[in-house]
Image 1 (cartoon, rainbow over the protein chains, first blue to last red):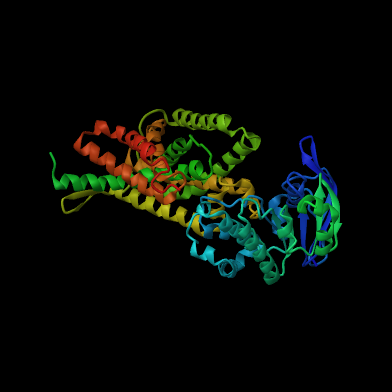
Image 2: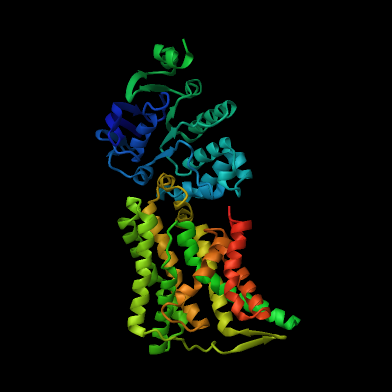
Length: 243
Length: 290
């Protein structure tokens, strides 16, 4: 059972503290959402898991299927991906000058994913027919929604055990956001994924959440044990529903 | 005086010359176009390749192309080491723009002065069975001194192109300058990828240098003469495009050859800069640019 346990993590940029002792866990097979408006530390926490930002205190432990516990703090992003944790980054970060196919094939760079690149490519094209149509097109020339689909498909090419998704709704029209969220849900079931998603669009995130956390000013303001708990929370009503 | 034979001769000579220009520019397409490393020492590495071919040829009678191929791995290691030094000293500190440029200037002078100290400033050339022969096809003369380097250049292009498009590391080389962090998120180490790419870039100089000294005698600072052509090709190709580099090289070769046949050789050097200006004015993204 692979899982991630984040314990009391503090982090920031230069002298600015962003996270003040955050504890979050994601268990195998769950979809956990990290809710919060801009600037509260969602992306910083995701970046700490990936080794992009180094926490100044606390621990981030990854438990593999074999029960081995690996400390992620101090690892490089490429090491973390090799372990089976892949990020769909905020802003998608595709390689704009490469084709759709080339972007997908780079997703399979991870050692253990290379052998199954053909099967995974087929899966990606089946799951996202628009990518199959545009496989020779440059990634930078596609629409925002298509780019988000490509970013998700590219991440799946690495065969992650745990998939982190940072703000998939940014820059997308509402109808596209629904489509992306529905796709994430479908893929999660098809590929038996564990998902941690940071999102500020509460109404969309709640559709796929098994449980979640609300992060305010770099601390966990509320840990909800179920999606229902989340939507009934006073703070959520205050922040998102204007009640 | 204009005749069809003269035109055909000029075209064939231009294509052959262009293949060689493209071979000289290939390394810069990889380093400057794909890796975003402004390696102005690239022509100096090519001249170093020429002198190694000259040395092995004059001492042991080895074929210059064979020497070029043997030295590809050696140049690859020099390139990988040079990138490591460049990375640790400049790139890691975001200091590559100006000091990095100075670094490669320094490398260029070290190579040039080193060659002058060992070999002096005289022109050197190599001996091989295919130098000095001419094939005749109808009214068109094809000097094998040009034909053999052309074929080797095309083979080298094919090899680099296949590597860049068919392998995991090749694709990563094409991606690394576009988004370094995104490449890390694909589980690749950008420093190792750039080191590999720069090694390949310098590796091509070993063979390109051998081709140069087959075509024309070489002295240590002759590399600077080619800077105009090399940059014109890189811009016309669309920075980073390998097929574009081959096409742009041949376009420049044909243009130079036509101009020197019909207007006189003294105009040839103006062609590269003319093409550079036209490309920047009308198609700044290059022939194969994106």
